[in-house]
Image: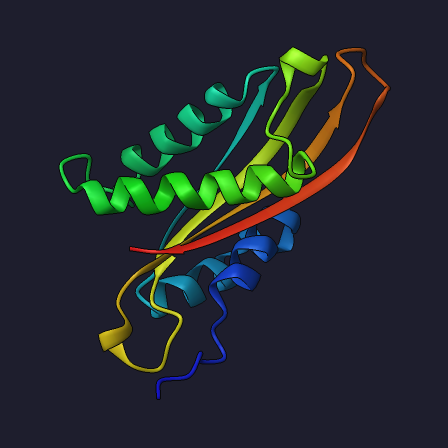
Length: 149
């Protein structure tokens, strides 16, 4: 049986999105040492499909996924939805219920297991705010989604 290594992909994605220190050269070098690919970005919207599109676009731009390989896009999509469920407390609705989000995101692709045979995984971490579309009426949120490719 193959066990998770000490390199937990979800924890690394959360650290990357939550911490300014997570963006230090040393931290980014540690991800590169693991041969993990990653990207970060920001998105704000009242529409969940725009959040999904922003994260997908960043992942494609940074070559974390290849558009012609369906399983990579599919894994990313499900990791994004899982992270959005955390942000929206299980109801992936924004504008239709008068909510808006302002989020930072991190996407990591790699193998968190000791055995290379376990293959690649994707983690999407989200951190930011959600609330009524009125400045000052929002609160913090965090979400994490992990899926195998």
